[in-house]
Each structure stands twice: as structure tokens, then as C-alpha cells.
Length: 535
Image (tube, rainbow, N blue to C red; front, side):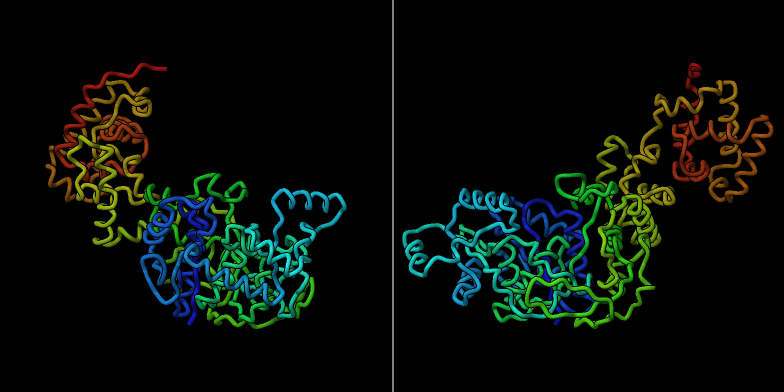
């Protein structure tokens, strides 16, 4: 069975890159009938923060990404916090030491800094002189006995013979042993593992078949494959996912910009739209496959011919990959997802695409009575909070507002911005409202308002509601012609009186939502407004 894991560090709220990684794990697992684990990589005690795990779980739940095993979902692969698995890492580190593939290093931080500086001055690319590799067993035993602190390092001088470094996204890639630090640390002096050891041990012990992780770990893949070989373990398939970038092409991070999922939750974005947006970032590329090779030293691998992968085959052609604003449900994402169709470059996360996608997901939702009711209830608390004294913040009125604004909303939280006049009287003192009538004196405005009020009252409100948009406009044109005014002036005065805003839905639709009583009251109040001084 396909089994994957999403393994965030609890160093703060889940960010968009993390949510995208969880999504890809979810899509791949569900596509091939598998499962996925939420594993918490909390071995860096200095950076872990309180509440992070609960925040990660809430963000995944909001997005509809239900992991199968992990915190609060016990299963056969626990414990799911790496801090609770330290005995396991020490046992594997000792195996590597016993087999001669790793050793204890007792050098202090000051010693290591001096060594690194000396090597750099000599022109060496090495970062450590392997001093402790040459300690005798007796010296090591004595140091351990007296309590000297040590780290466990892999001996990178022993490169095992194994298959070439392969990745589902990138194909066969360059072996990067020479780009790594000399004898990377596997177990730190506090006896917590580094990512290198912990990820290999946990992925094996949990039975992970496919590892999806960020491309920043691609240079470390040869080291990880070496560890699997040294331990006589079968490695999983690896897929390294290119990073997300801000529109200015800077790397997305928690320190720079608004990348926390919780911010998007609070701002009213639809979870399906967020997933749609993230899924399509970098999806839809075509690549030539590469040929395998055998690695037994620091080898550069280049190739161009086709080679099969052991991953489950995809029934979808790359030519059918969606474009970056293609609207997809989660079910459609699962059906169409193809790791081999991901770009090899970092992808810019453009918020304008999110606006487009979110708008159309909203339109699809409110096209059904149930969906419209759900959206109204979702935004009910916000609207009540914005318009605390308004008696018009009912669910039914909010549903009317959504229907009225349906072509204008990109985010359900924008209702108070686009149509405050549906809940409270217009602010005729605003600069926007005053600019609408600055060049239209009262002697022109009042006849327009009177004509429209007469139109409503003469025909009767029931007749007005029952009439078609076209027939009402014919009557408006008739009144306008009698006054000898341009349509822009006539409708602009009515829009000012009813909304105090330059842009919005049609006047006829606004009146239908406001109702007879509120419409007449606003028109009457607008008649009493004084002229705005010309500027």
C-alpha cells in the first residue's frame, strides 16, 4: 500500500508551502488508494513553539486534508512525535558506528570553528579534518566514560555502491556528495538526531513508500540514500517539490510577507480555492526522462533517454495538465494529479490568480440553495460585527446580498466593502458620495428623485417587483426624456441617493433587495441633502 508522510516542524503556524506539501501528499495517497501520516519533527527544541501542533492540525482540518495517522489519530506507526522516538535514533546511530560507517566526534564548537577556518585558508573545500575518526576505541571509551559530550558523524569517506540518485520530479540527478559538509552530523550532542538520521529511520520504521518534500533537501538525497545502503534498508521513492516564490521572486518564508495559512482562514478565502491555487502552482510541465547509472563515488550523472519509474503509472497525459487558473475540486485534483508533471523551477504564487479562482469557487457554491445558505452563515458573524446596530444582518438579508453581488465578489468577506448600503444607510458625507453630485445642483436632483418615487408609487410596489428589468428601464427612460437629462446623470443621482457609492449592481436590483419601505425612506432623505460646494 502507498504510504506517505507530511512531516512539519512545530516552529510556528503552518505556512502556504507547508499546506501545499500536505496537499500533494494527500493527492498522491488518495489517487493510489493509500494513506498518509502527520509526523511532527520536533527534534529542534530551540525553535519549537507552544501551540504549533494544534495550529497545524486546525489548518489541515480547515482545508479538508484529513491525515490517516498522527497526533490524535493513533495507528500502527506511532509515536508520531520525533521527540518520543530518540531511543530508536540512538540505536540506529550505534548500528552505523558498529559497522564503521559512523563515529563519535568530541570536538567542541570552538575547535570546529578553528578547524573550518584553517581549512578554508588552505584552500580546502572540507569543513572538518576528521580528527575524531582516528581516535582509538580505547580513547573513545575513556571520553564517553568521563562524560565528554559528543556528536555522531557519518564517515563520508566510505561511499557505498548503489543505484543512481533518482527523483520522481527531477529524474536522475547529479550526485552531490562533494557539495555536502564533511562527515555530516547524524546525532547531536543533546542526543537528538539531525534531519538526516531521523528522516531515514522514521521513513523506514513507519513503512513510508513515497517521500514528498521540498527541493531544498535534494542535495542531501545522496547522503540519505547512502544511509539506507549502510543500514541494508530499502529506500522509498523520493519526489522533491520546487519552492514557492513571492511575486517579486523572493523566497516565501514566515519572516517575509503574509504566508501563514491562518491569515487566509481569517480573511475568508475558500479552502477549496486555496487548495486549487496551491495545487496548480508549478503543475503542468513536460520533461524528458533520464537514464540510470551506478554510484560508487562522487559521480556526475547526465542522461537523456527514457527510463521507467517504480511509482504507480499515471493515466493522464502531460498535454492534459491544467493551466494555472483551471478550476478544480479536490476530487478532480486527486484524479488528475501527476508528480512527473511538476515544473523543475520555483513557482511564483500570484494572489490575482487566487482571486480569480476564489471568485469562481464562490459562484459555484452559491449556485445551490444549500451552498448559498452555508456562505451566508459563514460570514454572518463578520457582518454582525461590522454593522453592530443594524437590524438587517439576518441570514436571509446576507443571502440577498450575496446574490446581488455575485459578479463582484472575489472573497465573501468583501460584502461589507462592496455593499455597506444593504445593511446601513449610505454615508452621504463621504468624499466618494459628495463627488457623485458635486456638479449636479438640487434643482436637477430633486425632479429625478421625485420621478423615480412616483414611478414606484404609481405602479405600486408589487407591480414594480413583478415587472421585468426591461420594462422598468423603459419607464425610467420615459421619465428621463421628460426631464431632458442624460441617462448617466439620472441613474447617477439615484445611485447616490440609494448607495452613496459610484459603483455597484444595477439600481433596479438594489431597489429589489432594499424593499419598498427602505427605498422610499432613502429617496426622501436624499431630497433633503444640501448642495455640495464646487471645487
